[in-house]
Each structure stands twice: as C-alpha cells, then as structure tokens.
Image (cartoon, rainbow, N blue to C red; front, side, top):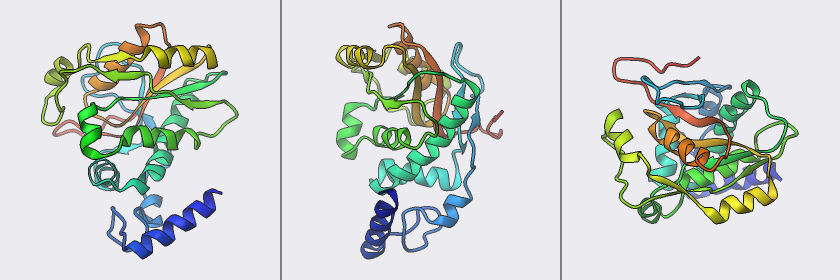
Length: 240
C-alpha cells in the first residue's frame, strides 16, 4: 500500500508540475537525492542554555538547507505532500529517543499545539499531520499512538523574532490539557509513556511548556523529538 501511495503521489507531482523543495528538480516535492543526503539517525540536541528540567530533546539535524526548506514549505506554503517525508524524518528522531530511553509499553506522541488562529490562517495543522505520519513509521513491536492532549490558552503571540527570555515569558503557563482527551487516553492506554513532538527546536521553551502541562497531570514524559534544531548565532547545533 505505501508503494502504491508513493507511485500515485509521484505521478501527481509530475502532472501538477511540482518540484523538489531542496534542489528544485521537477517531480516529487522531495527528490530521492535530497532525501538521501539527510541524516539517517537522530541525536540529542540541547539548546544553550537548556530550560531547567527539560527532558532529552532529539533532533535529526540542523535547521538549515533541505530540512529548513521542508519545514517551511509544509507549514507556510501548504505543500501537504511533505507531511509523509517529514513524518519519516521525525520517526528517525523518535527511534533514537526510544533506543536511549527504552520503554516496554505503549508510546504516545503528543504534538505541540498550534495557536487556533495560525491553524485557520494556514488552512491545516502541519505539526499534527507530521506526527501522525511519524507514528506509523517508528520501528519495533510497541504500540505507537498519537494523542492531541494539549491546547494553547488565549494570549500567546507569534514566537518569531523573540529571544530565549521573551519566548519563555510568552509561553509560561500557555498550554493546558484537554480533559476529554486525557480521560480517553487513560482508558485506552493507562500505562503509556509520552514523547512531545514538534517540527523545530529553538530555545526549548515550547517543548518545556508542553512537558510542564503534561506532567502537571501526572503524565510521564520520556523525551522530546523534532525534525530539526536551530543553532545559536555564531555556534553550530550542539548534538550529542
């Protein structure tokens, strides 16, 4: 079935005149060459300075080049076909996280929520789509599910252009749990362990706030996982 979907998407891309977001080669939204050039394994990336108490955050690579082009095209330009390759890349970060922090039971991926206004403006929820695509690509026998447990409280502004301190102030107490979703999860997977997921790690403030909200209800968070991680000005990303 995945092969048939790949062939159908590839044919559609050619007919509709799509091009690779990495090299602009006509055809798929992400060509095989650009995909092959991306990191094969995720690793821990600690922001500098890391928010106190943040669980280990895993990323696949630096937020530049092809990874940056993928995230922006999916999020801002609505290249919806990129949800699947981004999900496959996020799954590499998740695989590294679960190898370092093994868990016997089910794993629940919790997407970082977007502001409702941003979702309406974009016409889709890119993080949710990416995380759902990742869940079916994490190898192993364990059950991997996706649960939308978090919502954004009113008053949170766009993070673009904010430094680490301003991001922390903007996000402090900004996320709340969906009681209905938590109760549903407790009935279905009472012993599940959680991994917070997002597209890009910047200062770690968003991931830490999501972790805080989940742990406030006694939900255990194992790790965080993203596709890419930014580097502070004048420094490379700190992987390892």
